[in-house]
Length: 443
Image (cartoon, rainbow, N blue to C red; front, side):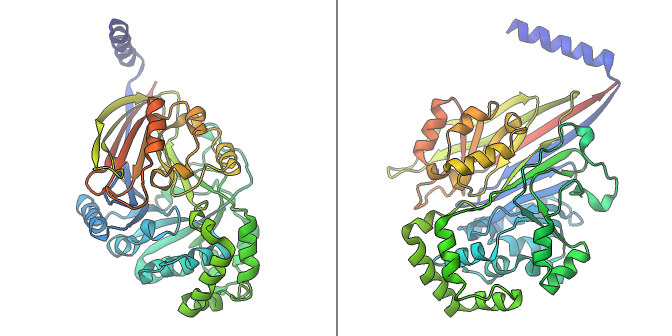
């Protein structure tokens, strides 16, 4: 205790002697209490970011969207809206969100027409017209004039190119219209050529409203905060079988015809029958595709970061519900504070985990907070995460206080407890807030 106090006093003296200017950066993030779903939002300086907006509890979701509207100025817009995947409990609030806010950048994972048909084949998909429209053709949906979206960014799987190591490697752009800088990211030229067969897509690409980028390098917000995306390329023998069968039903050569087919209920029923024949019960666990997002401040040697996390960890089992015996009002200091948002990706499969680990090799030790994949499901978890992410101490799941899926997994929470990790379960009653203050000192 005395040693810590002496070091703290000495650091204060050093700051007074050596530094005469301080630049501060403030960022706040929260996982909103929407129940079974996800609505994650943040404010980095004056920029608003959102990751997913959906829930099985629409009333709670609308309350959280309304709260966002009351806490920011009407002139402010959402600078970056990221969508992890197209399950309804992650996107069914998008329509309401867009009715209230202008959006500069919508970032979504690119999925091909086979994966799109696969999602449509699942029982009960398309409970609202907006979720159906988003999945069938997100470009036409988001770039419709009524939705006031400036540009849409497809993130495609990349080729494993290393990301920049130093802050100086990042492109600096002072153009206020490009607060979210994607210029260092590589275009997927093959995919651009393929999508340009659709006249509407080609027009949007040429007008700078549609970008198709590989996931290898960073995007940068306000020249201070980096985002690194990961879109896992799904490879499956069962998926190939589904593709062969489905080509006899759908016209993949003409995008407009395909869109009309996917809107047709009788054709969607045929797709569902094909899906059942190919996948049986295995199809219900087909959750590999999700846009994973790492984000955090661009690290420099003279940056000091303090973070504060608040939330309540709760569980529901088959027994009567109980509160996990820790209320987190946790303050800690980290050299770097990076967050990993996982959507519904499955990291349990060896190949999936290897690709994820390789992609984030340079960020693994910077991750201190992880939003667990698939609401804390044990089936999407890999315990190698604990070994490979040495500074990752705080985990969170976003699920309903009472849900039929068993989220979050008690088995997974016990694994985290055995490794002395902290766990927070957001639900429809309580969310989590992450407050980050950083100071950068100059000679």
